[in-house]
Length: 377
Ligand SMILES: Cc1cc2nc3c(=O)[nH]c(=O)nc-3n(C[C@H](O)[C@H](O)[C@H](O)COP(=O)(O)OP(=O)(O)OC[C@H]3O[C@@H](n4cnc5c(N)ncnc54)[C@H](O)[C@@H]3O)c2cc1C
Image (cartoon, rainbow, N blue to C red; front, side, top):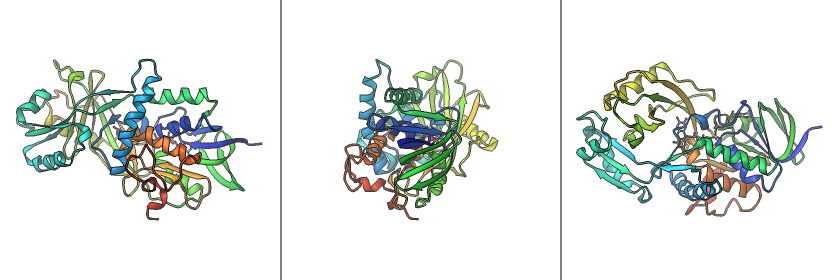
């Protein structure tokens, strides 16, 4: 006999964990995760930054609401902080000044931006090679996110409300029987009225298993590097730096630097690995800009950011597969939007808000801008 739940969530990345923890007080919830532990894919490979100048209007609105929700969640955590402030400098060479000017003109007021001239750029980033940076834009309102703490906060809530997390439970088939989904997984067969598709890069495959309407998600690989700090440089005292054309990003982490190469390569869902050529390209870009004294990274890894065609997350019931809910396409902002998006998802699933309405976690925009039916087939 298969076990019966109210809701089955597929995927225990940040999005699956956050929605399960929002649902758990009001429903019997099962989370099925293929890997032996949660957060193994995109969630565990991210830069983990919250930026207000990032993404579409919907992403920015979700980010604003998530800041308040994370602040509130932090109060439950006995002095531990889910996020900490760190400045970010958008950097431009002489030939990139036009892009920097247009970024500055369009910047969100919430990011508290200020123009930096060449001298100020050198003061903020002392390891920058002289002559490299012509100007910068300083964003003061940026946060580093503690992903491990975000996940353990959700896991504790799941446990407190009696929800079940089943790792090693890859979903292999789904069938709708009457008003119930039968979900076959490596951990057994389970039933529930509602299935939430939070399978990250695999969300398209899970949708196909459920005969849901295709929504055209594309995973894109991004390679990251861990790089030693030059002698005499206190990495922790430095800001994050984004090249204005997003060709590299670097941030301090535990006394060294975490960097990304700006790679944006469409690929199939997989356990992504960093290509040697991309590692070499990344190190070239970093050593051209910074006086790093090393030409090899200490470590390299890659992750998939999965996008819908309009680069806005997908959150809503499928129009053709009854009881099948999409929570996918969070792209490069799934951590910073998870608090707001999971609240919206839980309210839609539990019928606390109508799909045609608005929601406090999406200020100024209708929920329809997240719905799967907005996307071309
Ligand atoms: C290099 C990089 C940098 C990033 N930087 C940031 C950042 O600074 N800020 C930010 O907000 N976001 C960032 N992101 C994006 C963020 O990491 C993602 O948007 C977010 O983690 C997506 O979470 P998810 O839960 O949807 O996906 P995932 O974390 O990938 O989780 C999906 C889960 O579903 C499971 N699954 C798949 N198929 C099945 C199946 N058949 N059965 C059971 N389980 C299944 C997978 O094993 C996986 O654990 C970055 C991403 C990358 C790659």
